[in-house]
Image (cartoon, rainbow, N blue to C red; front, side, top):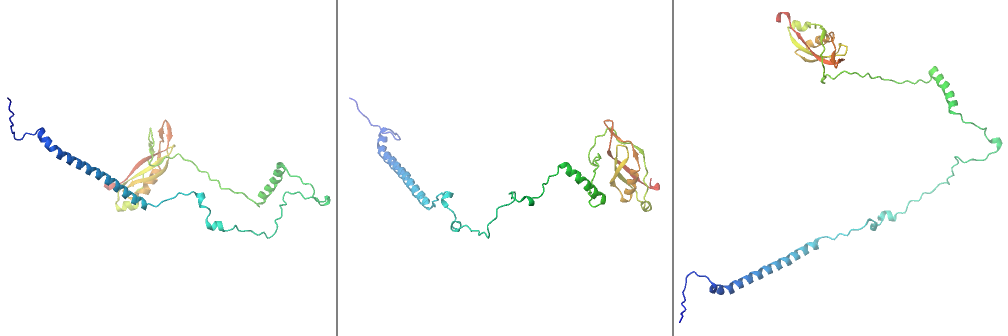
Length: 248
């Protein structure tokens, strides 16, 4: 004979406990599901109501064609102005032949040829020019193009100019009395023949020496610069030093 012994174990969770908790959990789950469904349905209808109110406030716009508008009232009602003619306009008579009697007809005329017109115009023009009645004058300006390089431009040179005649600058009397000394740098344009063409002072210790240095540079003579065995014009720099005899 078998005997059933019930043993109570503390903290044991099994099928018996699940059967007791199932009705309560089922009811809670159904309630949550119903709540979520109602919340979704309510949100949908609330959104529809809000969008309907916004759509009622939007003005309705109807697109019309330009032809449906018709003419403006001011133009449609106004009649075109009427122009009254003072008299009947006569038909044009230019180019319309009019018959006349033979005694009133002018003599036949011939049109001169281009050669006959040129022969008649030539003596007339000659007489006018000879008598001084008509004179044709015209100013003709001939611009001479120079190949002088720019003072600040770089020019490739195989051989620089060499000084053949060195002119000594005159010491200004006012600078000599004042005991002023200094140095002047003159930039000189030497042409293809070795002659100085332009002279510009680029640096000077005193303006008293500038004119004397420029005059000395223009009196000098050089050999022309060469590029590809051909003489060219080029700028060179000449230094001029002004010192007194007792200060050397």
